[in-house]
Length: 388
Ligand code: FAD
Ligand code: DHB
Image 1 (spheres, rainbow, N blue to C red):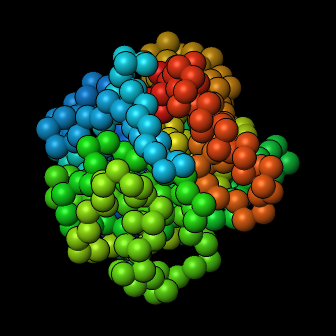
Image 2: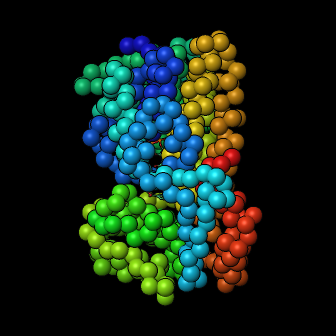
Image 3: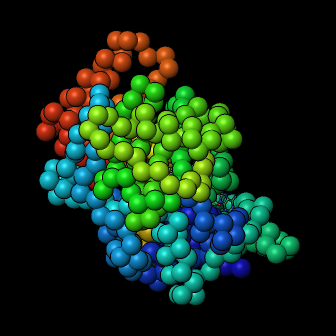
């Protein structure tokens, strides 16, 4: 088998890269270890920056997102018994859309298959080889047989636990990491939204977040011990925790409903550099992870593959490797801004078990400053919508 770009992983990064390359007349094959049903059912991100919406729309896969996604012009910060609105649109001229990542996945898979794109699901033993040469290849098993896919380039879009990043020799790699001492308990609930806008709440018992998925489904999260088990959390215990962390004396209540999905995610900040080695290029979670508080992960993956697709196009059209050579440097500027923002939001909104009373006062003061200073509110809003 031979193609121009071998893509490992059919997450948002791999599928969108394949689609953007197709629109530029460049062939690719996507290798995915899970089934189509699994990738289309995995519940993850929900917030799309305006720039992400624009890229999906320009690529012709934004129709359902425009119809079914909810455009949000603000978010709320809740602390000290009060909620404070940050008007994203007034402060930045931009907005965000809440539209589930697995819906983006469905739209991209449908677009790739409609264009006769090649996605091989259920592959195993995927291994990039010869990335130091001009003839790299990827070996893998599919339907019980061993295959080799030869390519000009290999794109590692296989997420944090994939095989691509470890293919960059340790001697040239530098990893930066912070693991947080808490996780998020996430639930999906059958009910109308509790709020028109997302609510990020800081509370002494821990962070909580109100989000939505559709007019009949809510997405709620709360800070928990990352080693805890969903089995320890009855529905009653979950609702008690959410009511306590989110409600105050103004009469607003979190709407309850049937909880039909529960899960716990750990939280880390992570960047691996360089994002390329020879003919291998990493994109999305394969190269970097952010804690979810800033809602940046999927947006960063989209930003990476936009840059990478442009650089690969320049290689074929203009025989220029300049953009490819600058890929890591260009991608990392945005990545580190998002890393900073996600760390900042996480630090400002979560409860740290080892925080001294002094640090707790500083955290509260920081939140007060953000909501009372137009400059600081604008800085938060610009980062949240991805305005720069
Ligand atoms: P992935 O989505 O991880 O895709 C990688 C793909 O590669 C997977 O399909 C995997 O099966 C496949 N794969 C792995 N290894 C191999 C292999 N060896 N061979 C073949 N295939 C392989 N981000 C936001 O922007 N906004 C949010 O609101 C947000 N909320 C989040 C909430 C939660 C609960 C979680 C968990 C994440 C959230 N994120 C959010 C982060 C976001 O989901 C990720 O950043 C995003 O999925 C990254 O996309 P990706 O394509 O790089 O990687
Ligand atoms: C969602 C996830 C996030 O990480 C976030 O910051 C906001 C919303 C969500 O899944 O809806």
